[in-house]
Image 1 (tube, one colour):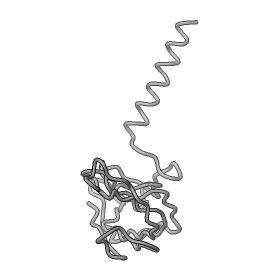
Image 2 (cartoon, rainbow, N blue to C red; image 1 turned 180 degrees about the vertical axis):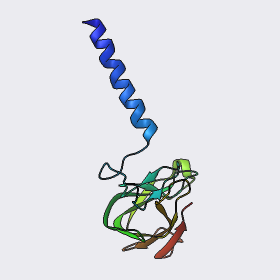
Image 3 (cartoon, rainbow, N blue to C red; image 1 turned 180 degrees about the horizontal axis):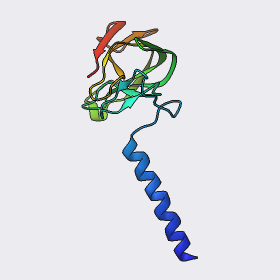
Image 4 (cartoon, helix red, strand yellow; image 1 turned 90 degrees about the vertical axis):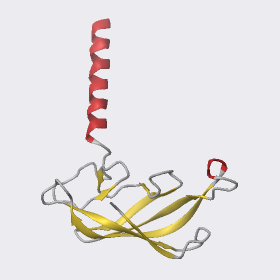
Length: 144
């Protein structure tokens, strides 16, 4: 009996390691070879992610609760929340605030090393209500 439990634990651990090695899943659990992807801070390709970190260096700005209405070869459109740390009095002690946004990904380019696959290179945000301090209603970020 103990031997079976050890084998089961090893199997579960191996499956977990395999999942970690493959990288994060996509919203539909599949990543087709021809899908246009968005590359995250870790360099993983994603399709229709539910969250996306904008501030890779410190994690003080990211998109959450993303719902995509379009995901195509040249652009993707969705809605979600931009969670931004106010860094008051400094970032480690700051609070995160949520701002509703529409999101557009575009300017697809061939993904290096992935024949037939492209990745979006520009992230556009449009704040539909309030904006973070010193942030314009419409802003764009390059994606590597």
